[in-house]
Length: 89
Image 1 (cartoon, rainbow, N blue to C red):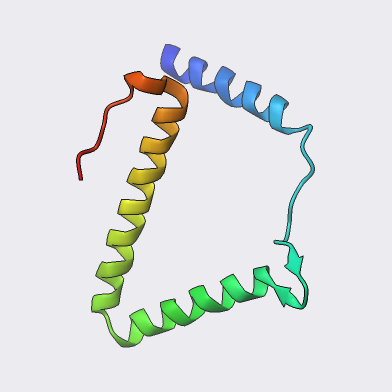
Image 2: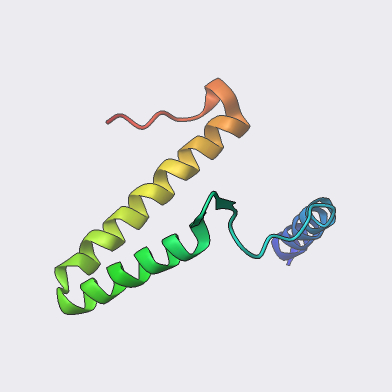
């Protein structure tokens, strides 16, 4: 109950902070290249290939786990500074 209340307060504070930023619905266009359509098409091709060749699904899941881990380590480094745990490679 207390944990839920704390999370509610944190989410409300983040919503109040981020409500001042403009809402982004598409990615920018550089020259004649629309990044939104390029990334969408690439992800759709990869999802199609993973339905045709199922081992790609395992590779995709491993890549998502790895990228999430690296992003969380970068976030911890940003928040905690030198006190953050170090992942040995």
